[in-house]
Image (tube, rainbow, N blue to C red; front, top):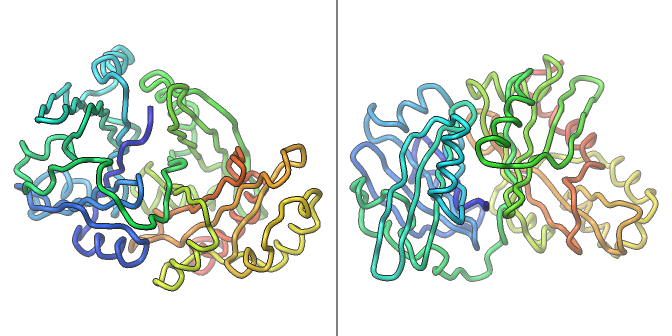
Length: 363
């Protein structure tokens, strides 16, 4: 199971499309109006995002936005056999929103179904064979013909991203284990690792799920203190939802420099972090440009027992929508580094807390 695409519900799809194109280097590849919805499809390398906004007060997008701010509404997974996947989900008592549909063209076929995920999140399950429509149900929904194209067949010059590394879900306090159980039972994810992070002001618990038959990784967080950033997200989001998407890049320093020039804002990292970082055992063996790393405020983590030059580099944007809920992570796994930057968690959460203090949501 892999991540096929991610569907955002936003206030203005065209404006969001332009922001992604001008700020994060995405390419607009399709768009059109439906009965109730304006939809835009963008890509950067193998990363596909769908942006939908309401044209009327009716329809699922308008309904979603009445209860939640702009954000991820559908995390779509690519599966090897959609009939088997939906049968497993039904046996686990998942709520089916759309039973298996088949769209066949001259060069391929698309089979898909949709289930209700955790909270307001939905999951489209997609099986692709050959060249398929960009979106399941696009033709039947009345979208413009440009929405029908060859997913994965459209080239892009110098894409910044090489894939989606992981997607993070926030759930309410007490729901971490039930959510883990749901994704295990319904979509066959497996627990991988867990973390408990505590600062002087707040705390949270996180567990990582991975899929044994693919690259999908789904960390799930719950708050363990009233002032936690996770609790702030839940309050502003109107419940559980996707907190951030980690986009993989092979040159994070160049990518950040490019995005900064385009106006993308990142979290500030304190200078003391870099002083302590270079004093860690094994720092000299990484062969990193520490001056450029500090200039672009990149977080770096490694394990002392890992092979030389194996390091995880990451950074985080500020929230991209009007409400301080959803943001992006940029991540580079140098020499196939594993993990999620556990050594950076304290510095990261303290940086996020500084943003909470500025907003007045944390004292």
